[in-house]
Image (cartoon, rainbow, N blue to C red; front, top):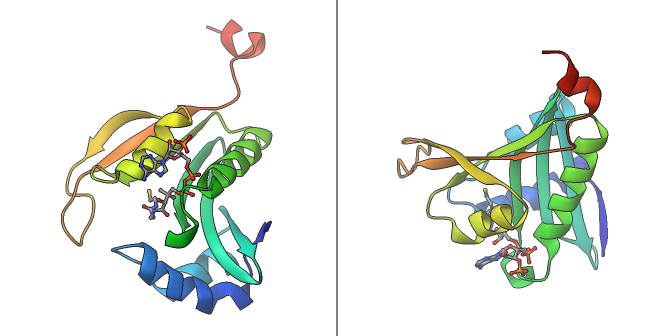
Length: 156
Ligand SMILES: CC(C)(COP(=O)(O)OP(=O)(O)OC[C@H]1O[C@@H](n2cnc3c(N)ncnc32)[C@H](O)[C@@H]1OP(=O)(O)O)[C@@H](O)C(=O)NCCC(=O)NCCS
């Protein structure tokens, strides 16, 4: 098992997985954009025996980090792969100086909400009718990163 950067050669496989994993899959073009043109994106895949079993994308926009997508192939769930990707996202965004990490998640997505709550995210708000396919609401979830130093708290 390895975790590595996503590349152009992965995109057909990702396109297939996207349709299996998500009710509103991103079109392949979206990944082409994320990979080649979005200066804020960070993409990783987890590969086992030459097959992609999990992948994620997060954006780092100055001091704000946002999880754009995270998914694990059904047969490989509950084995800690999503946790491994969250650890990588938290490590990378903390290292790059972000002060918080946010994401949106369907209010019905109990596995994902549990994953995020276990990792210190709290429900910060509800975005009504967020998803186009079924008009489901999203929770906006946020978790602080790093911590306040004396410098940051001193200047009021
Ligand atoms: C959500 C998802 C990414 C979790 O992946 P996973 O690899 O199975 O998760 P992990 O094995 O790393 O589990 C880590 C924690 O997540 C939570 N969790 C994962 N699956 C869960 C489930 N079915 N029910 C409740 N909690 C769950 C638990 O807190 C778990 O910790 P624990 O094992 O100590 O209880 C996966 O179910 C998935 O790909 N779903 C479809 C795509 C999706 O909804 N992505 C999120 C969009 S916001």
